[in-house]
Amino acid sequence: SDKTFTFPNRTGTIALEESGPFIKTLQALGSSVLYITPNGDTPSTSQLMLDGVASYNAIYVDKVSTITGIKFLQVIQGDYTADNNNYVGLYSYSGGTMTQVAISANNGDLWKSAANTTVTVPFATPYAAQPGLYFIALLYNSSAEITGPTVGASTAASPAFDVFDFTNSAKLSSTNSGEATLPATQAMSGNSMSSARRWLALY
Image 1 (cartoon, rainbow, N blue to C red):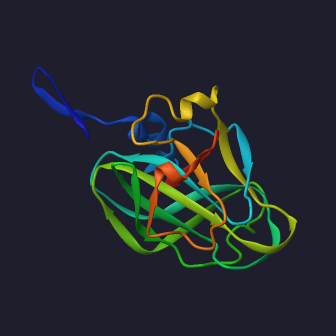
Image 2 (image 1 turned 45 degrees about the horizontal axis):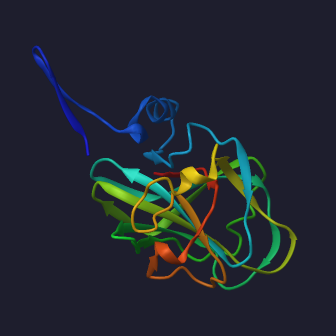
């Protein structure tokens, strides 16, 4: 949460990284972004989306916020035939368990935006978020594929950092395979570590 500081004749708050200078710069340039995943300011690589693989990506909300949806960077346009579900979701987190609190509409064309563009995906209903740790989930499903979609990401300097000294099997970025849909709850212990962290934003 915000930390209070006091100077002579002045009291204010110090926000965490997600509300730091980079976010403020994006907003000043006209962006609606509120928070970004903790990957550094800009993506350094891309991550191929795999059929039936859900990814979960940590993000911290530092104040009460209305979250309308997410943004991601489409690096390579997908050329595929969709099946099952293609959407994004938001999960709260407590004691090693993620709980779905918001989800977008199912959209088979979700991963087909033009290469090197920003994609904005609204949730079916905006979510009133309290401060805390959340996870953005992405899910891609196809029955046939010519070109797999890729999204902007950052690679950790060391894969060990993605689990660091976290409790309850927590991971900064993780995946779960064989998913036709995003579950209502997901135990972090059931997910595999993913060292290529997707660069994502809440707006």
